[in-house]
Image 1 (cartoon, rainbow, N blue to C red):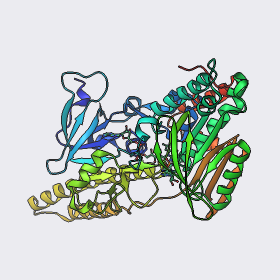
Image 2: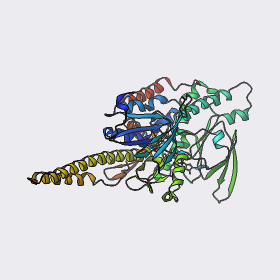
Image 3: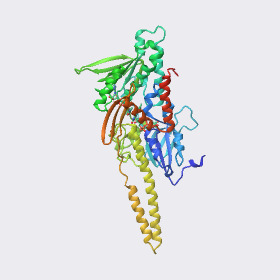
Image 4: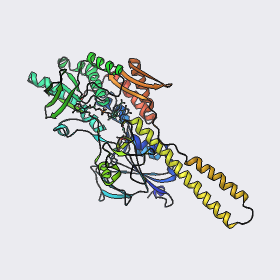
Length: 476
Ligand code: FAD
Ligand code: NAD
């Protein structure tokens, strides 16, 4: 085996679960020389989620927003181990994680245990369905690369099936009705991208369906994008009207079947009416739910009894009621929204914390060594005592780590037809802007946030390609 990969017994085993925003930003800033670092994730790449909605229509190709974890860890100073596996159980007493290779190809060993001294849980969240019947069986989610690919295929499948010979008018109408459930940023961005795809490309190649393709966005609350300011909510709603996307607010989906969505709409008089909407494609974007591994760990820790949305953490991101376990991102409850911005700042905070912990341990060891010398040398001790004092001062400085503090840089969302909305904090002020300039800002902001130069170049090329030649309408 690679010599570099043999764990150093003098270092602690730091195990990181996940390869998303939290885990990768920790890895990026972590000085890996201080620990035996192991990363475990069923996905051997980092995914730049902000551009995932653009992958559903081919504005951006999926590989342009993926960064292999192998290339991320190879760039670290000291070797990092990676296991492509799902963590299925954490035992905080024995300090072990059970992992399972759930990929198609399995070797003789596909389940094993990994011991840890320090554990970081950054497994994100899964899709919320609220137990609504039919959702899992019939709708597409929009969280992973595979989801975006499935949606891309289905859009064109609906279009081709709608133009099949002798299709009845009702069936054509159903097949070309694209329903999006959830008016958070995922649902809004996807609806915008989908309408763009239709307006800019599908319409051109399949003109016979021009007046039949419809996008409907369903939201249970009185408005979409609740995290944006009122002015931008209004701007989004009026842009959607122009784009001919129907927004149905105060409408909660209660049931999904293979071809219909059943929703309960609350009218202005407060009366509830049930609506049945036939659909061709259904995209479900109603937010996050807690992953089973996180739920299981919570059930083992009495201090987590009252936590509902994930692992309650303290201001240093330590999982409440545990020792040596930290959590970041969507699986942690630290009082912030489940966003990439929060997860990446939390990951970077833990990297600083762990780098500091290693440094202070080194200084403590040095102080212990000097103290021993001091005891053994009864002669001139002033110089040694002075050195100890200097180290103690240094130690106090290192140990003085401020708790995690989140800095909100703003909220950005694409809303279709080359317009975006932004609530940005800048120079102590808040700016709410929407429109085409904001769209350019959105593009440049997301580009600068991409993981690597390689990703950045690929995304720009994809944008140019889809602008010059149109998006590809072949169904893979
Ligand atoms: P993730 O990034 O989801 O990573 C979780 C990781 O854990 C993955 O690698 C996963 O494979 C792995 N994992 C899962 N289960 C296990 C297991 N059992 N064992 C080991 N590993 C496991 N936020 C923004 O701030 N701005 C945006 O523009 C934005 N756009 C978004 C667009 C979309 C379509 C979506 C879905 C989300 C968007 N978000 C955005 C939210 C953002 O993506 C999340 O908040 C962020 O990904 C959370 O980071 P995380 O590290 O907690 O989880
Ligand atoms: P969300 O939780 O923000 O929104 C889900 C929406 O679905 C809610 O408004 C909810 O009222 C609605 N809903 C729930 N059940 C429903 C039902 N049965 N019928 C109709 N509507 C229903 O979820 P999201 O959009 O997936 O976002 C998840 C997280 O990721 C958020 O924190 C968000 O800020 C972040 N994110 C950010 C961006 C961005 O900044 N551009 C993009 C995507 C996601």
